[in-house]
Length: 441
Image (cartoon, rainbow, N blue to C red; front, side):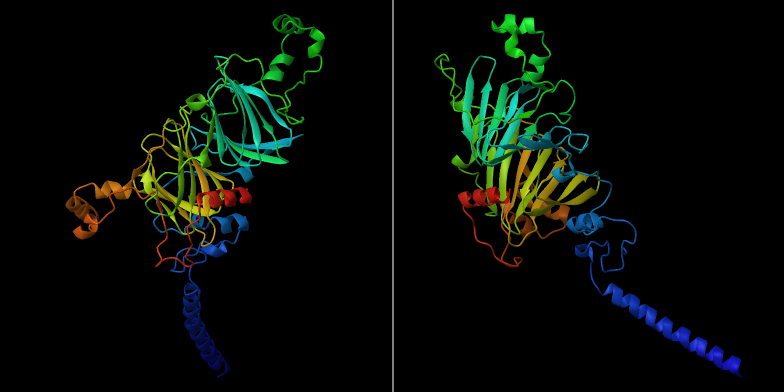
């Protein structure tokens, strides 16, 4: 009898547990997606919580790496690198950290760096086998350069100002404020290989003194204190001297200038009203033959429209804010990446993509770089709008009146519509956007 009662109790217990488990699993499913919590769970039965080792902060910052976008498919290599993952070289007078092809193998055309100079400190006199492009985002710097014809330029640059030194041009940069910082870009992804950079004191230190004396017409002892190995950054006093005695007309100005003052020019038209878009390439900065760029401010919730670049790979530096982009590389392969301040990225040549500001309150500010003489992009919407509407409708299986109503002008930066905006934002002026970006640096 006792055994019978025990058997009945066991059966009832199993029945109760059996009823409870599906309910428990159902409750788990009803929790909803957990990507924002750093877990690969879609709330619809796919995924499960991470139980092993993981970097929770990285998971939280990259919800799309956890499978958040159901439209992602295929194998797309990593297209993102953060300067925070780069080794920082600290020196007396500043620091530098870079991203080269060994850090981001998908970047075949461009290498980049962030560099900081304290007041008076000099990035020593040097030249490169490749072109150098710089963007000042904090403080002020003095640039000085000399080309093959003995033409020279020395100018003060502030926030938003750009320099471009062609391959082989001799140059240097000095910090003028207490803290000065800028983005450096080079049209060579393998920037660290031997034969890319040539420092003047390194050369002088490795040249026999009698040859130096003969070359300069000076006593050999003058060169006893030349530093070796090269210091890269040198502490110094702010320059108070200007170039004197140079031949008339040898100063680089106008179309020959190595300097472009972005914020002194009008931005490009952006019919989508989603932000501010500056283009800097050989069409308005003639000396910049191998590096084309844009400086973009996108409003909260805004979208850099779906597009691709027919002439070059795209390299990006995200200066402030948070955003994401889905990159389509063909053959049904696409992957979504999350971005924030200090991130870089390289989108393959001709790959389709967008960039979206994922913040409801903060502008997303970034720079696009192309190894080209010009910025070029093809808008998906404009392409479809300028194709016979019945072909588009039949291809995408959409109503023909929708196809006929597509905008025929590039939108570039699309403002978040009121229906999807959680907190409507007002348009900010070019000057205020620039100031906000500078403050966040």
